[in-house]
Amino acid sequence: MKKGLIILLITSVFLIQNAFAQMEKSTVRVGISNQSFSQYDYQNIKLSSQNIIKVVDMSQNTKIDDIAAGKIVEIQMNDGLYTILIDGEKKYENLEGPLLFNSNAKLEIVELNRKGTPAKYDGMIEITRAKNNQKFNVVNVIDLENYLRGVVPNEMPISFGLEALKAQAVAARNYVTNAKISPNYDVSDSTSSQVYYGVNSYRDISDKAINETKGIYALYNEKPISALYFSTSPGITDDWDDVYGTEKSIGSYPYLKARYDKENQKPLKSEDDVKKFYLSKDTGLDTNSPKFRWEFDFTRTELENVLHTTLQQQSKSGLVEPKYDGDIKLEGLKEIKAAKRTQSGKITELEIIAKSGTYKVKKELGIRKTIKKNNAILPSANFFVETEGKEKLTQNEEENNQLSFFDSFDIEKYPATFKFIGGGFGHGVGMSQYGAYNLSKSGKNFAQILNHYYTNINISTIPKTVFYNEYNVWYKTEFYFDKNTFKEAYLIIDNPKNATEFPFKINDYNFNDTKSITKDKLIKINITQYLKQGINVINFAPLTKENKGKTVNYRVELI
Image 1 (spheres, helix red, strand yellow):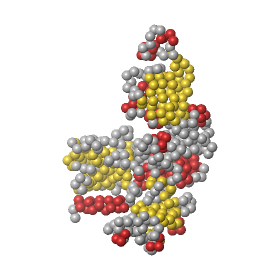
Image 2 (spheres, helix red, strand yellow):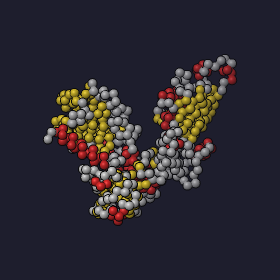
Image 3 (cartoon, rainbow, N blue to C red):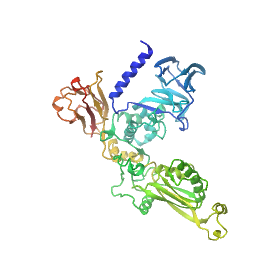
Image 4 (cartoon, rainbow, N blue to C red):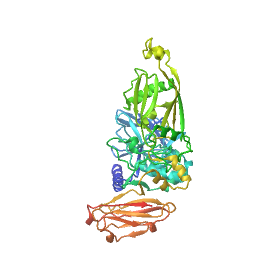
């Protein structure tokens, strides 16, 4: 049999199995960035491995000769075609690609470091054309669980403990399940998605958290939620609608609601409420975070210089009204105040008032990027501003503002300093990671942590659909059941078209006679007694020919 035909056959089986997997993402495509995480398009790159590297040119489904262990493989792109060099010697030219590199050992991207050591990856490396066809993307194609091993310890300190890390693992699994940021990859390896450092990140305790939440998701209305998370809550998280919502998207994320750390806490409705709340140091779960409360001081001149740069940058993003082009330098800064706030006091519209003009900045991230200290953005948009002192404009500022001789006798005084007082770190929607840490310290398990931050969710396996298939491929669900975390487990079967038979198996228990329950459209079976501590497997047989055209959906809900 020809090599190309073998590869095509393997690919077909892989696609069939993944089609049956429905929404569960078993494989993740990760865009790998350069050393500074600033670029995803490459002209050339070098790979190596301590074992043989197998290479496939996917355009022709042809296998290139194996590359010996320890060799440096350089991939270049010229005029939209690939060249492969081995230890500096040109071996293959005019390859159309994409090119797929695989090895039984880790694949190393030479000259790229992660966590201070050479970047290494499980899975495969795919080299595929970028948008302009003159450069390429480097994509790590990896199974979901190994992807999470490279994410969880980077997104949450492993010192936060097992239950907090389990909550993080579920949130990260949910996040990537819903992600597709580029035609070539699902997620990036940077903070624009989830921080992913590959093999260099693997840690025993985070591996344990991933293993002990295998197959587990947070669902809302049978679908995996967009499990947003962030570092530190100031004591109140926010509604997605208030922070990110638009006229068209309001109500799209009903599980991302404001959560209050204290039962008697009320929304911050006035500026006095905001000041009192953010001057308090003992409100909330996250008080041990270094960013729970913070202050930043600016002189007026310093802040004006910062705003001169950042307002131009945010104007290009369409977040400043009117646009600030910098032709007339912002001077005579009088006041910075909130024009619009959320329940937590987060500013979603900021007003900057100066002698040279008044500007409004929109969106929490746009606001954070506008107020920079030492070139770093504000930890959050949860703040208020106090001013101190009064001073006249300098002579140069008077000239820039075209003051007349008579104006200079009655010149207005401006604040000498601006103090930003606030709390929290991040966008403030979804799960607070420091909050998860402290909930776990108080004895809460990961399911309780997730239910604290995400409203009206179910902890469940992902729903799968069973239908007739001529390949007789069974439908498989694997999940970890922890008897110390969950009291019961229910198999939820949705049989909308009354399929007459759907045999299934839970571990070693066969359920062959299902005719007695097929009359119901929604079936809920307590399966706790059939489960063991650890990994459990449920298999559904494909529907029979008599039920062709019908479907049966199932999932396991953990309570």
